[in-house]
Image 1 (cartoon, rainbow, N blue to C red):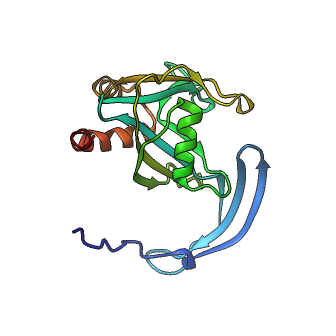
Image 2: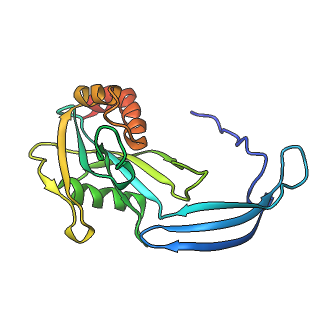
Image 3: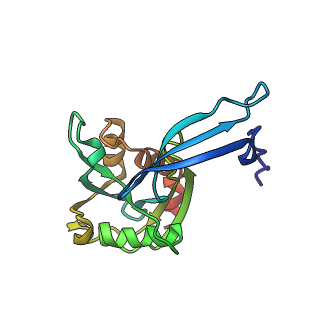
Length: 208
């Protein structure tokens, strides 16, 4: 059995004074200016700070894996944040989506697997919850591995009312791992998910 890990954090929410939150922009995502001060490690309080923060809903990612065929399912779509990428703004990623009100992360994982890849998840394994960029964004990601049957999966998917144009790729784990090592899977969900899967893959295959 694992032992309890005591947090290292010296401070908590009571050690921050939030003076004002100012909404700068409202759209698909929001932008806020947050005025605050906080306790300092060497004692006392900081000066008042202004920080711009990207405010968005929490997200869910799910790395789809067929342990019987040793295949993974990834989706490819254009990403506005990668328009300046030297190779391509179309990115290969695990299935992902934002959490709607009233949904659990597991609900989102199963919904997005259907919408983006046209497949049903047999079993979900939660891997990590993490902040991709806590210095500038409120988003927290819950990442799963979803066990599936990859037979007959493929094609183009996505919701028209969300302007999604998503191409599904089914490939062997080894092919995907080579692409990860070559820098072709260059997003946090893929990097975290594949390193977990590399460690646990043999066990998942024995249990399949």
